[in-house]
Length: 206
Length: 165
Image (cartoon, rainbow over the protein chains, first blue to last red):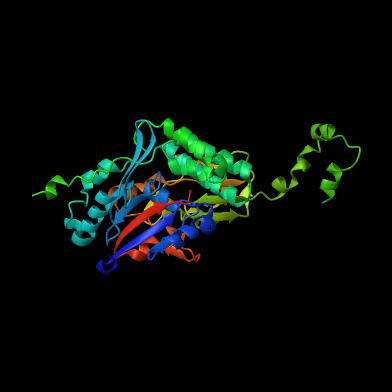
């Protein structure tokens, strides 16, 4: 879709940097823009709380659709009884193609009212969690693992809904990461990836 | 260096030293020239000179622009077209109380070992909620070149996150 004045910018949320993320870009033979986002700056900017999440931005720099799961395949992962992980790739990519073709006339380009309904300012706790996560990344970069762990954990306590905070920390203890993930997943009330709301805007249905 | 040798002198009981008037020499670096590192957005700013204070982060007003883009002016702390009045108690000579200012503008911060991490500034962030203009970011690509989101202005963009973990 590049010929339609459309760009994909992929941002690896990897404090481990190129060492952690690079080979996955190689394997995907990426032809799009590939970022190494060690500080999770993109998640901070757009309120991404898991991966993959996506945001659509138009030619004027306006957000067309805020953060939502951004898969390109349909999968149902049966993890535990009654707790499937569902990815909705087809509906997402079809909507994306529609917007790339039709721009603001696309039924998937959200109105201001719908944008406001979906995007909520971060709470005080969420803002402190993000500051704490950044401090953890700093200490990790200085090989101060004890301080990094302290602030990673503080971030998770303040914002337990953010899986990036937890999974990033677990990535540095891979032998325990699977169990950590399962324990948190089992306690989850709602879906791991929120269901996409790709309903067309009422005003654009006529 | 001489002070350190006192601490290490054989026969000098560590507990007695701590109880003695000489105790402050245990952290001479902190007392002599306090410094800090300030994290804000994608910036990590070394601040060579801060005012000694056990609780607050006082920086020189002159350092504010490189820390968070604000500039202290007569009408307040200003950034782009925004000016936030600064109460008198947050200023003292050349010093500006950055942690106090953060509390005033409801900006979260956490600090440890001389590193202060400041969260988003709600008044700046509000612009995104109101205007829907995507906040810019500056993140390196695989070759270490900094990529700004704003460089894609004029195109439709999908920004998508993923991770190796």
